[in-house]
Image (cartoon, rainbow, N blue to C red):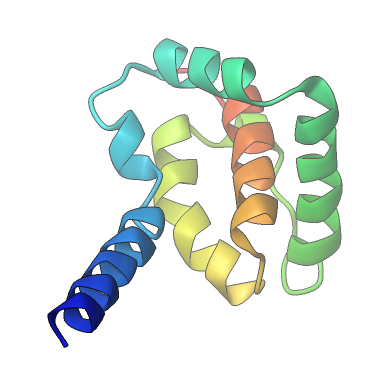
Length: 107
């Protein structure tokens, strides 16, 4: 019985660890550091895929704003809610975020 409880606890811990918001990892970073982090972790092809997903998913409900029209901070506030509304999975949301952050207005 203890083994089952331990296994359930560990499984739950892994699931919650994987579901932590990605924004927390970039908290305290400057805009330049966030852009550098995105460019380090995503290829240009992945960011272009993010652009395609963004155009196809977000344009269904409202006008698209050019990435440069918003600051990184503004995109970071809007993206979690909009990613959820667009029913994007984590990988798709990450690519959209990468595209928008890489092309956002720098403060």
